[in-house]
Image (cartoon, rainbow, N blue to C red; front, side, top):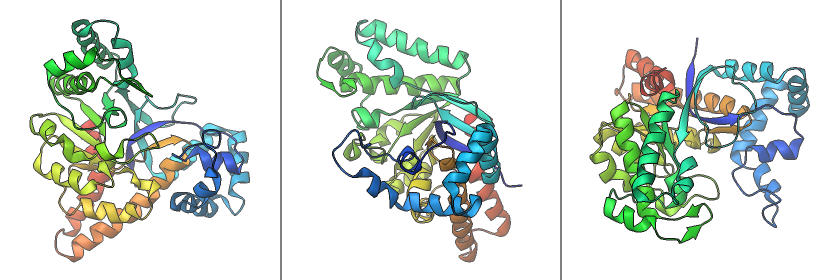
Length: 352
């Protein structure tokens, strides 16, 4: 029986929706209330939504939204369980820093604590006390059962991270602000470095957002290669979320060079359906088989995780088949590659 661990998920729920609500529930662009533009038409013809619509028609029939809503009205948990069972998803790693929990998940899951949730509360404490509170908070989260951490510093001040305590002290007192609060780049950098030390000591992973994201991403500062010096000095488990797509070849090479670096294929699987093949193929030009993990970046609606599994299975079957044809793998190694990608690597990294 096929099984997969979704190594990058967020809270989602199953709600009755009309077409507009459903289209926009999976969109990372501005909402209609946020900008004076026709965002609905754009999102209805995204390759992702076209793929989602056609796959749901195959599963639920031509009037898939009507059938979806009927099933959710009957029992939303049964509907979500049906989707995840059809996708073979048996467990998830949830970054709870985005969205809120509105329903229980019908599969086993691990939680990651997003460090940005506490940073803005540290600026009135003084530098030394702020550092003390931050590190103790991380250790407390591990005692509470969290399986690791996540940082979205790529959305804040970018991935050109310096582990410099002197600069951190200087920037801590700066009052320049952005939409997320105080910039304090040197201080935010330093907290990421402290996080790496905590998780190294605790032997748990840290996810770092790399590459593309939603409309708030600082894309020009999100290249995985900016993290080279950081991972060179680090011996823990660093997961480059989204493999840094569209800079995924950088991430793949880093996973080949540095024992600490792992990748997940979330977001471009499934939000860039052709990349579910093209980018996965390019990642496996060099990435070790024990370094790459399936993930969906599911949020809001469960169908994202369901579609991601389907696209990833097709893509990996095609890529691994090419590798057998070229003599890179034999059939036994092909099976090992597919099992590693879908669940063995995540089992090991996240401690399932």
